[in-house]
Length: 175
Image 1 (tube, rainbow, N blue to C red):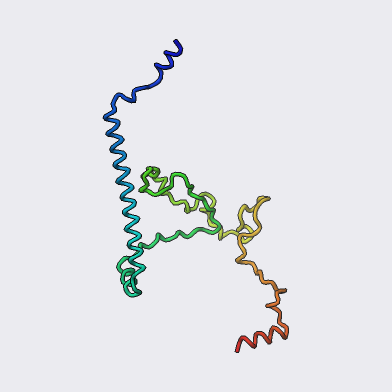
Image 2: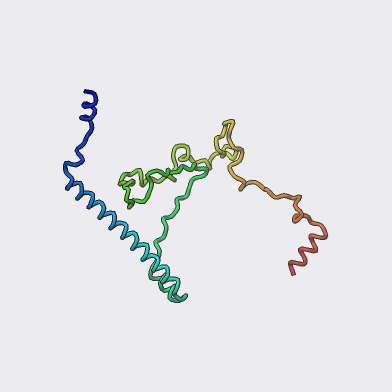
């Protein structure tokens, strides 16, 4: 009984619509072959164009560049003082024209991850210099924001000595 019950539970309707399944497979296979051919043709066309540009003279290349302007990249957004960086993530962030359909028209795929959030919206430049550090007041905070405001000149360096040998060297190179 148990053996017959287990066999009856198995779905064995694979061979019910063989003709329809074959036609569906055939359509998928034809679309895959077409897609692969289009990708191959686009790569060949790009290689031919690169080779054509390589064989041009300088004047022809300047004229070709003038006619085929590259689109300007979008302007980079200016970040606020000490703004945190958030990575947008790598999963499901591929090209919008991908074949695996991982990107949709949802707003989340077009979100600006460099926009200030939370603490970053506050203007930290109006704070006193001592408070313009990350995690002010916490025990694990960093001491400096950056070394722009610090004088890091090493006065023990031989190039900064003002001895007779250095003066002779400076006279030699100023002539």
